[in-house]
Amino acid sequence: MTDTSLFRNFCIIAHIDHGKSTLADRLIQKGRLVEDRNFQNQILDNMDIERERGITIKSQAVTIPYTAADGKTYELNLVDTPGHVDFSYEVSRAIYSCEGALLLVDATQGVQAQTLSNMYMALEHDLEIIPVINKIDMIAADIPMAKAQIDKDLGLDSREALLVSARQGTGIDELFEAIVQKIPPPSGSPESPLTALIFDCHYDPYRGVVVHLRLFDGSVKKGMKIRFMSNGSEYEVETVGVFKLALVETEALKAGSVGYIVAGIKTVSDVRVGDTVTGAAFPCQAPLPGFREVKPVVFSSIYPVDSNDYEELKTSLEKLKLNDASLVYEKDSSAALGFGFRCGFLGLLHLEVIQERLEREFDQSVIFTAPSVKYKIHLRNGEERFVDNPMEYPDEGLIESAEEPYIRAEIITPSSYLGNIMSLCLEKRGVQTNMSYLDEKRVELVYDMPLSEVLFDFYDRLKSTSRGYASFDYDITEYKMTDLAKLDILLNGKQVDALSQLVFKEKAYDRARMVCERLRDEIPRQQFKIPIQGSIGSQIIARETVNPLRKDVLAKCYGGDITRKRKLLEKQKEGKKRMRMVGDVELPQSAFLAVLKTKEE
Image (cartoon, rainbow, N blue to C red; front, top):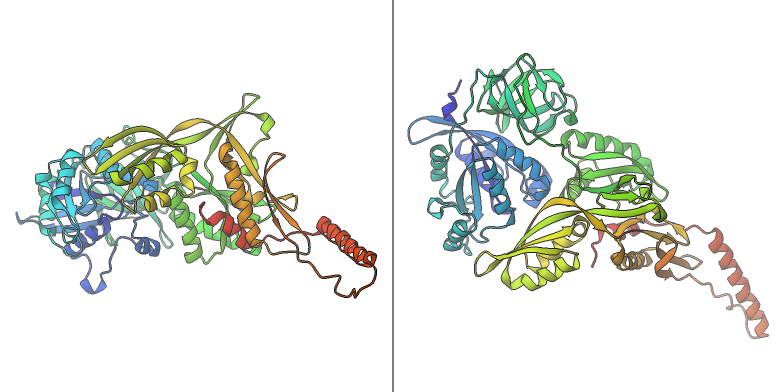
């Protein structure tokens, strides 16, 4: 078995689009883990969505053998991390599994918001940080600027920064040597009781759940009884091994190594990221710190476009849950859309990914209702209730007060876009808590703002306002008092429950008007007039009308007394009124999509 001093555990941390997956590709190619003819870009990203969008959603791990200049062969364990703020808990667990980190800075863009937040996370866990300047082959690369920012913003020594082009493979040999020389080997004793951290897992249809582990103490081998410390469940290990792109079985894993175990676990939800695994016979004293339940922050209901597809949607969600333990769902129903599911997501990107996976992998046509956050409602009788679904919102008369979740938003932007971005944050009810110039050209803004304001179009507008140069990172902080209202949409006097939304009272009028206008354009004309109304309680705050189709009943009247014409018009009017009383307006699916999918303009 390999000596622990030859292990190196590291991760790559960076802002989105700074070349993390491309650098991982070069390291894997250099380690000859895959033949050139079988190689493909973003090899660690095995979902189509990840490749198309250029983001890492599911973190991966890989063991790369490397023969260094000193003639020794080292085992380099790369624990890849997701790049988006929605998955920051997974990033923290991956960082905790390592002794060192490659901090990637884009030579064309410099230090961005997530570069900073990920570096602080790495420093909290005492990681050895190696600064790496990537994309040095680009025409727009400004290496002196990147070095100055590493010195000033990150407080690291830019003289130690390695210059790399992950696309062309420049500087990869020097990077390997730096990993071996600068990152310390893992500490830990193979003789101590087993202490291992779960940093990820995935589902294999033939073996059940494959658990990804970093061992800090002890060892694990086939036939050993293990225990998960968060829920006390025990399993017998069937196989152990390491990641070499494929799963490669080994005799055992010992302290300091990164690998996987298979133990006949049937559902991913039994395995929790951040949990501690120990031996059932000789357990460790205490679990590893930092474990917490992953809680959803954004909620939306999913309905099948065709109500007959409900069972198929249920099966699809069950299969998706096997691969994504952070997806939370329960049964839901709507008078307008029939049966569906109320789902909880880690953030908006997570919601979009689930939607795309349902449509692509499971061929489901689905409708998502407007995303919402979890509000805290204080009732007059002293009760406290959490509400994320407008259908469960209590009567106005019973409510004492309401609170909504706030975030601490960090925005780094070129100073030329400062005015526009401050106006956008102000419009989104943001309160500025800090503003500091990082250098002559870049400003860091810190805002307290409601999470619900970020849900709709904040990120898109931030990118368009700053022409793509501003970067955004956030942490959920606390609940604060808000003036909440339930906005109902009435169609021909009947409430359409699937279009109800919980909104900030001052913005209710604008939201109601937008929804009514969209519906007016989408609903086909009937033989009678259709009023579309937005209301808060019994008060109508917005209205649009779909005009009726009219048959020309006077066409057959040639001349004659005016009373004959009036009689025919009155008869038509009565018919229209009666039709409106009994007529039911069918809301086409396109109307739901127009209201819910299109961002606010």
